[in-house]
Length: 460
Image 1: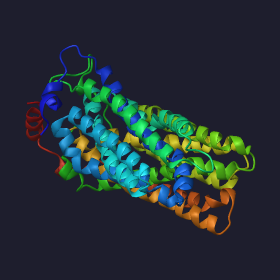
Image 2 (image 1 turned 180 degrees about the horizontal axis):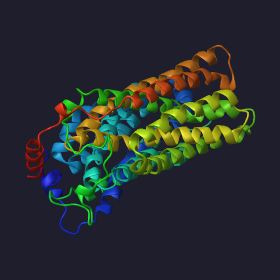
Image 3 (image 1 turned 90 degrees about the vertical axis):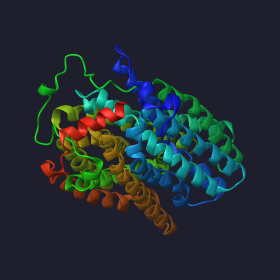
Image 4 (image 1 turned 90 degrees about the horizontal axis):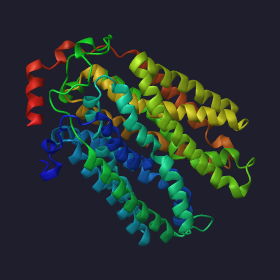
């Protein structure tokens, strides 16, 4: 149970509190933990400095995504019970501790501490921090659920926009770039970033508030809320949600949509360098690759707010048809054109990453449509085990195939075309699963009296 100023009752908003202060609070957490998407900037210095493989250098990131899903699933109900301030504070402590432990590991030349620190401890911070503001935002913005979750989750996608140039500058400043990177320099980069994020994330848990029980947006009447076949006015508990086929179909949809994006994102810098090594000056290749990572992060962030907001009008199911169906066609274009045209390559990658990010931003509203708001945070946490699965599948597929192709002497885009074809198949399977999603059977609905009693208990 949360204690002192972390308790839920200490953060009930007073009358007149602006709900538009909640998105900045959520963004301060999501922009920080979104640093995970800039991990590929760390990969080249780690591989050269510690003489490890691409698969090994991906381990902290992969474990972090695994722990994100697992911790979100395990702590989802506790986040709903203790409130967002408690969750954001715990997330900040774990995420920052991950950087500090990693720094110690690198100073001692013990890479396993980087895996444990950034991957395990930091990954717990990722999971709790990711879900902590989502259910709160849905309660503050019942009239615009897609927009509200898109704003916050946009921060997770946009975190690399800050982290990528910051990491590059710190690595350069500490002498941790080039053919012989300084391992202590990489350690100093982790240490510095941990301190920066500790300050930045504190803004979130200090600012966050929850609405009063009787609060609703000015001029909004729940009776006039948009009705559609997949938008329910009933509620399903987290325990019952995982018994429904809708939950597991959406789990597969999210898994394969994430796998298709995360494979490129985790290895974005090396992919760009392998694709365009012959057409880019050697001295500018690393900088161009870092710019590519930043552009993908921007597409990831913009897609989260743009497409998830659009889902408030077009519907969640229709948006996932776009994410999965068009995404498969974009991967096909990459496979066929390879590095023949930089503009086509860049546009395809940007759209793929925008759909990847949009899938994350749209899924809380999709859950709200299917299962109601009763325990949507806990349901969201359980669904994020799909992210854990994809966090293994995506990097493993891309890195393992690339390493095998390197060993076989394959150069350039040929290292990745097999991976891209696999992604096409996964997206097609996800498309089919999305088509099979129907309204939840009434037998899984909670009685109104149960929902009302639980909400009153949480408030007191």
